[in-house]
Amino acid sequence: MRQRLSPLLCALVITFAVGLAGCSSGAHFALDGSPRYPNAQGLLTAANKKDLLVGQDEYAIGTRLITFSTYNLTQLPLGAAIDRYVQVGLHGHTAVWIAVVGIATSGQPVIYTGTLLRIDAHRRAIFSDGTVLQLAPQLHPAEQSGLVIAEIDAMTGQVTALVANG
Image (tube, rainbow, N blue to C red; front, side, top):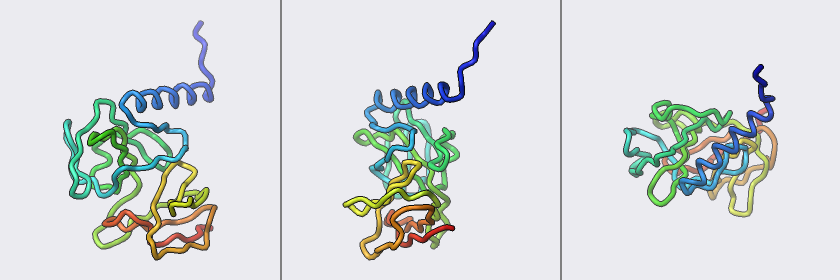
């Protein structure tokens, strides 16, 4: 008779395995909601088996690249990130993780909704799902925690508006 692992144990095993995969590639992140500080971000416009194009910058693809939704930390195929606003974790010039943040529409801000935990001393908004967004210099948000909507300028990668959602 086979025994089944509890859902909590399964989640811990998966998180540990993903963390190990990231660490072995040189990335220091885990899909556990801890802050992920991106090295690059922008619209992912092209990808193949060897490299990808984020904004105007080209990066190699790591052998253990992990692509996931920043909202629920579910892994996605790389193709699901094309034409989306993404954050990228790099080891040197090689992408080791890609977080799909939102849809970029020409001339419109990228909309991200999440639970803001805090704004750090470097004016980075840190969210409960691990997303980290840089605030624009002119933005002085009243909200310091709670459910918020962030408007991201896709060209600069900075949050230009942060408003309570609820």
